[in-house]
Length: 124
Image 1 (tube, rainbow, N blue to C red):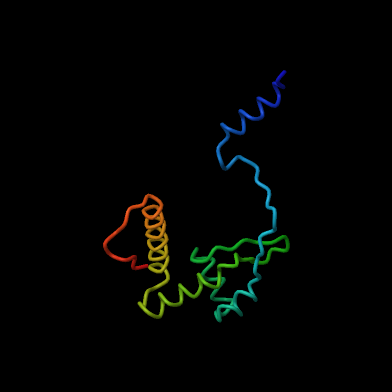
Image 2: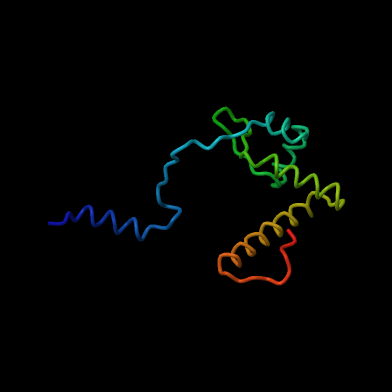
């Protein structure tokens, strides 16, 4: 005998969109404080706050209202600093360049998964 409630739960899991599915973290994701990110990246905390306000760096607020960052934030800040100093870009254009570079990386990864090879090496 099959349980109709179990079948209904299974059917709802299969038809529910991926964003509606409940996921549990096995290991908590480490977060970095503003001070830690500033120390690791060598960027002043006020400039990091400006980058967050401009949408160049992703950050969340903890329960106390402080900014917390992914462990990749220092690398993102280094990339922003390289674009700013190397290409003399303003912050609005840096956001556009970062979006384009991310898109290129996704497309190159999709090509690698599909087994398509390009004659030229990836430039990013």
